[in-house]
Amino acid sequence: MTSKPKCRFCRTDLEHTFVDLGMSPPCQTHIEPHQLNHMEPFYPLHAWVCGECFLVQLEEYVAPQAIFSDYAYFSSYSDSWVEHARRYAEAMTSRLGLGTGSKVMEVASNDGYLVQHFVRAGIPCVGIEPAANVAEAAVAKGIPTTVRFFGLQSAREIAEEHGRPDLLLGNNVLAHVPDINDFVSGMKALLGDRGVVTMEFPHLLQLMLHNQFDTIYHEHFSYLSFATVERIFAHHGLVLFDVEEIPTHGGSLRIYARHAEDASKPVSHAVAALKRKEADAGLQRLETYAAFEAQVHETKRAILEFLIGARRAGNRVVGYGAPGKGNTLLNYCGIRTDFLDYTVDRSPHKQGRYTPGTRIPILAPEVIRETRPDYVFILPWNLESEIVSQLDYVREWGCRFVLPIPKVRVVD
Ligand SMILES: [Zn+2]
Image 1: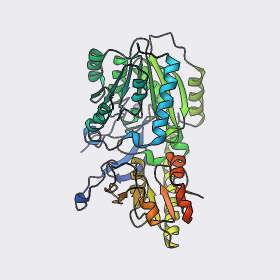
Image 2: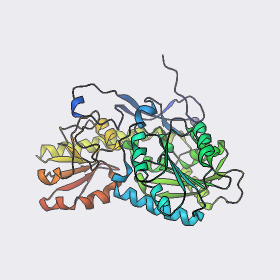
Image 3: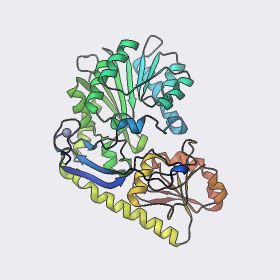
């Protein structure tokens, strides 16, 4: 018998379902041709909300080492990410007055797509990345990178070896952390006395307002509101002193944290304003979370209704992208090659493989031009404008784009 799941932050028993998406395979285990006759592990994709701190979360079904040690996600394959990173680096360099005497560290630095901008400006940097194959790509580009999982223990070792940073950043990592207390206490231990932590993560408020249920997958352990993150950071001696709402991943937050002892940075008005916005949306009431599941059921029905109609009318539909969110959407809705002939992805690491669970072939984007489908179903909907402009040529033969989230929609 398994014991009751507990909140990964406050250890309260988890008793309230946020949404149960059934069984799903880990989203980055793309199937190779020789594995097509093999079985795949499926794990529950059941999100809970803590009745005490309102942290929305999954249980830790899959060991993080199994997920992240040979991760297929290379950030540099998305143009808009690389651009977002460049603008971030410029903004922080000027806001914090960073220079050759400063130090920048990034947790989950991926292939160095972000840190490279600081390196080019001559600012000493250290990337911290758990996936060895991804870290190798960073080192090859001349970005100093240490291969390890981040937590209190590794933070102390890094401080010993490399000193303590003026800017400690972690983008799209907080949600992926299984032990959020160990992670945040590591940030506290590593950050320089007058240093600033910035983190970006998808905002739970946007997930709920815009039906982004497909951003729930096993690699994302936590779904974060500002109020809950503030509470977690405060517990570890860090104060959130500013916040910005940014458009990435369908609506994210960029938080700014400092040591509780550092009085040199006053708390901005944006902090109170965002907390009020979340409270007005009902994020401090359990009933708001309980209403989400019915909305997800309706989103599935609408997506299937579109696909059934299109196929019945004899239209050919293909996918674009093989992102983690696509895996949740395809598995939860039961979309296989009966609906999508194939999908395409720019990452050569995914091409020639198949989507987990649903076994849809992943091909190179050029195949779209050869096969001239009627609809391109965009799985990474957060990259809509980038993809629509890259694929502008499909309009030559009257092909149209379909976006599944927040509501299924055809773009002419
Ligand atoms: Zn809790």
